[in-house]
Length: 306
Length: 291
Picture 1 (spheres, chains in turn purple, yellow):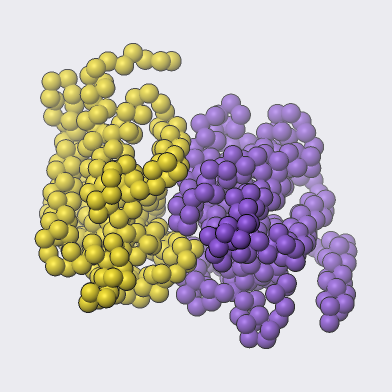
Picture 2: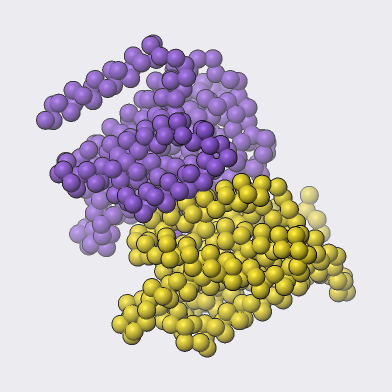
C-alpha cells in the first residue's frame, strides 16, 4: 500500500509541474492561491494542530514577510525571491521574540496575546510611514509573468507539507503531540516543552513569512488593513480544521476544497459572502470539529501519518 | 515636537481617561462574566455592543426616543439575543478547548456584522443628542461623556447589586469559582450559563447604546472593544469582577495619559506590552484575588 501512495503522490506532483504549459492563466492564478492557502493552513497546523497552542494572530507573520519583501524590493532594489526569503527570516525572528515570553501563557491567554500581536503590528506599520508608506501602503511594479510564482508558491506549499510529514513521523512530532495531550505530563517525562514549542513556533512562522513575500510581489500593492486581517488567520484555521488538524494532508484537503468553494460560491454572493463564511465557521466548529480526515481516520483506521 | 505638558492638560487627561474607563468597565464586566463562568472568550461581544448601538440609533432617529431612555429597550433586547445565542450555539462549546469557542463566537460575530451591513449599510451614523461641554475651571467636561459615565456607573452598580445580593447572582459567582462544586450544591449550571450570557449581552448592548451618543455607529464599531475588554479582564484577574471594574478605570486612565505623550497608534502598542507583562508576572491580575 505504501508504495502505491508514493506513486500517486509522484503522479500528482508531475501533473502539477507540467500544468502551467497546458492551462489558461486564470487556472494558474487560481492554483497559486490554493498553494498559498495550503502553505498557510499547514503552517498554522505546525504550531496549533500539533502542540494545541492556538495562534490566533498567525497572519502577523504573513504580514511581516509581506512588508519586509515590499520594503526590500521597493527601497533596496532586491530581487523578489531573496527578498521573500529575508521576509521568512524576519518572520521567524519576530516569532522568536514573541514566542519566548508568550508560549509560557496557557490556553486562551496565548490566543489573545497572538491576536493582540497582530493588531500591534498593524498599528506599528501604519505609524512608521517613512518605511511602510503608512495607510497608503507600498506599490511595487506589477509582475510580468506568473509562471515563476507558480513554481515558487507550489515549492513552498510542497516544502511545508513534506516538513509536516517528516515531523509527524519523528520523535519531535511525537513530543509535540504529547504537549498537546498533556503538557504537565510531558514535562514530567523529561520533555523540554518550552524549547520544543518554540521550535515548532519558529517553523510555523517562517513559512507564512515567505508566502507573505510572494503575496506582496504577486499583488504588487500592500497596505496595513489588507495585509493584517484577522479574517486571514481565521481562514487558515478553518481550512485546517475542515480538513483535519494535526494531520499532514488535512490542511491540503481543507485549503483546496474551501478555495474551490470560495471561487464557485462566494464570488456570486458578494454582499453576504462574509455571512456565509461566518455560518460555515459555526457549522465546522459544531458539526465536524475533527475535520474530514479525523472522521475518516476514526472510521476506517487510516494511518496516523496522513 | 515635544509640547510642554501643563498641569491642566494632565488633569484633563486624567478626567477624560476616567470617563472613558467607566464605559470600558461596564462592557468588560459582561465579557468577564462569560469568561469567568464558562471560560469562553466572547469575540461576538463587540457585535452585541453594535446591536445595542443600532437599537438606540433607530429608536432615536425614527421615533425620537431619548437615547438614555432607550437603555430600557436595548438592555432587554440584547439580553434576549444573548439568551438565544447561548441556547442554540455557545452552550455546545462550554468546556471545549478554547479554539472552538473562539472560532464559534468569531463566526457568529462575522455573520451578524455582515447582516447588519446588508440591512443598514456600512455608513457611519450618529445620534446627535447631547453636545457641548461643561467648563469646570480650566477643564472641559464633554456633556455626553459625563452623562454616559454616570449611566455606566449606575448600571455597573446595579449589576454588582444583582451579583452580590440575589440568589441567582450568588449562583453565578459560585459557578465561576468552582463549576463542579456549584453543580454538586444543586445549582443548575446550564441555567446559570444562560443567564450569565444574557446579562453579559445586555451589558454590552447597554454599552453600545451609551457609546452611540458619543461616537459613530457602524457595523464594525464593536471590534475595538473586544481586545480592550480582554485587557481589562487580565488587569482585574479572571473571575475577579470588582477587579474588572477597576481594571476598566485603569485602562481608561492609562489611555487618557498615553494620549498626552504618545500618538494614539502607539498607545495600542503600550497596551499590548502591558497585557503580556501582566499575564507573565501577575496572571491573577493586579488585585489580590477576592472573587
